[in-house]
Length: 257
Image 1 (spheres, one colour):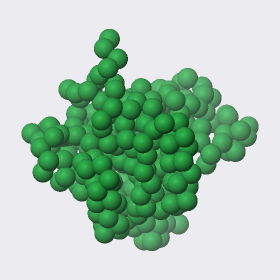
Image 2 (cartoon, one colour):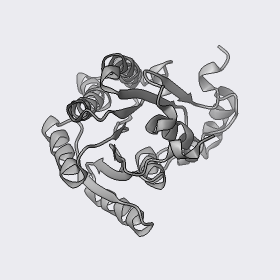
Image 3 (cartoon, helix red, strand yellow):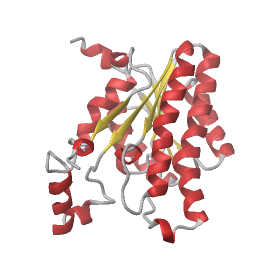
């Protein structure tokens, strides 16, 4: 295998929702593969700490405030990245929220907030990035972070599942139209991974029982198990892959009904 096909040297990657969790991990992985990284989120102080960490390791990194629910904020964020490093070549559409609520207890505010961030926000970022890529005629790639809940459903997560299902379909539709512009669009659908947000729950007996009963591999995923799919889709190693959703879930979607 030609390992150089996974090399991102000379590329600029923008990651949304990079103030922690998956987004911060994705930034570290892409920087480690040679990319200049633009980390975005609303919490600028956490972004600055991540940039300082990456720069101390010899990587090029830039923190940019961005609220994906605000079109002007998205545009300003891209303009700042472009002024610094010109075209953004790789976009990781990771920003999102989780707001568990039973369907009968759901308000229109719950629904709209979820759609505005997890679906509309992903569209805003992908659309702004694609316009710039198409205009530059250099191609590029968009990686949308979906979820296995975009392919199945879960209790108290109807709005989240609908938003993530929208991400899966948006990925396919974008890929169809943007292939002529040499822009590849794919998605990663993670299952349950250990993060700072869920580690307390999955340390409980209830959390461990859930994983053992629902996930065929009987464990949580580790963040570095997302590295391979991310680098495949971001690099020339995945140059003939577009419109695809890669499930990274320990077999969770294949569990017995």
